[in-house]
Image (cartoon, rainbow, N blue to C red; front, side, top):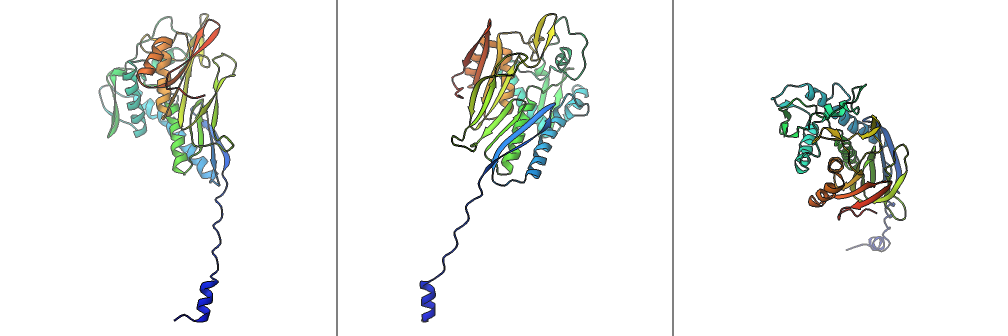
Length: 329
């Protein structure tokens, strides 16, 4: 039987204090050098450990650079390039994974994307070796068919004397690594970027909550916006002829090499932007579509269900063409 005081306590039981509201999210930024350029991360979070997160982001992109750079003589990629023919050579798992993924795109694009063009890249003045004279003829063709990748254990194999070059896919993979670090820390609202290749997820603080990025106009020597794209839960990568090029006997030659001809790309495409869940995939396909040109590129994009935006030179004008899946606006 309850006493009077027990009855009173039941009637006047003190109320629990309401839980405090969750900390308000704020916009934060972290940036740093990588791959000869800068990475930038903008994200929304309440109270992150900026020091620890910055260290983790720097470590992730530094590992990609140290593994996949042609500019570092002791990178895993450079060591593979010096290795013998006909032997499986052990490599870091991420290098094997990126090469394996790239080979799939090489096959799907029928060689328009080719990672075996390191010597041609150097010869045309876009690699780590200084060049005093540009070639007066085509360089050796791509040999992606002579490259194999194993994942378990991670290893690479070559049957021809090419130089592996991952400049058309490594930055995209680096962006994916930035995203991996952020999401491992529970951050799901972010925009991560390396030299124009980017990936966005979630919401940006503000009324509309939309991450917006400028699509660069294909104008040589001047940086201006062509359009503003709204990016939600996807990656964007762009390949173009207007930022990295050399002058060769009065002709401007873009940095993208066509492994099917041995020459730098020479077609009416000014740029290609690809939207995909993976920045690594978007990066490689943007390079492939740039090589394929203004006619075959859009057709291949449709055939492989790619969201792609093409800017095509028509005299002094630029014509915009979108694949049916490119809905960014």
